[in-house]
Length: 267
Image 1 (cartoon, helix red, strand yellow):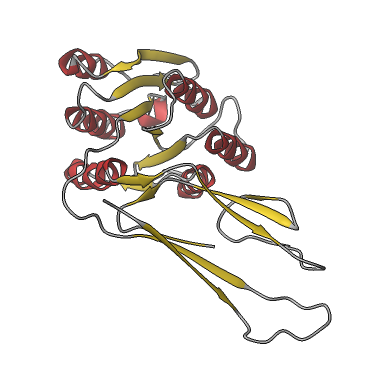
Image 2: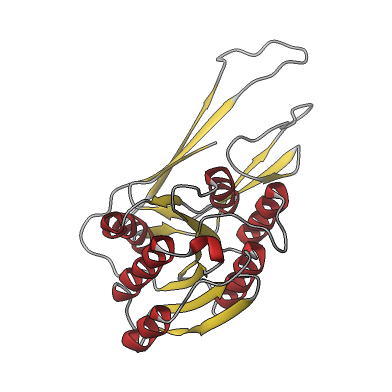
């Protein structure tokens, strides 16, 4: 059974009168689990970039990665597969993972197309996850792409804001960059804005390592929907929160992403 502990430390032991900045470090730690525990079900939306820039080994790496991940799901988990070029197509509607061979066979039939509507694919993948969104499970979009968006929303700042709104709905986005020319800045920003992870697939040999890391994390969620609140007294106000989005100035609420076994969160 995992437990959470929280520690808080001020940057100064003594605070003089008058206007001044004081920093507060808050750390939340999920203690390592003792014994086995039943894992939370997964609700995953795989989003595959099948645009022209993904032709060749990029798309092959992507398909191998998704097939590998599907092999590690069970009938208690739910998954969907969305593909996109300039158009967006739901290849496999969100639902329980029962017939893995059918799902993997459909992925094998994905071929490269035209332009890159990354935003459209991301939004549709998010909608698929929301079809089965509920408490007591892990909800995540896994976006596999080179990030070279040229149709739909292409502004990195707007895409990051969209990812942040997905996070506000309780869903994180993990991005997996493919190929030597992928847009690392964009994919990192999307992952960070949504509370997800970022990986780079540079060869098929790394696929087991990458998904072992990602799935291990998803399978070891110990706390969800965590909020940390601070309330200033007198003339004390909070002017900035590092690392996470916050609401308010005198009474501040910080919404934290899922916390995993042996995880540390600081703000």
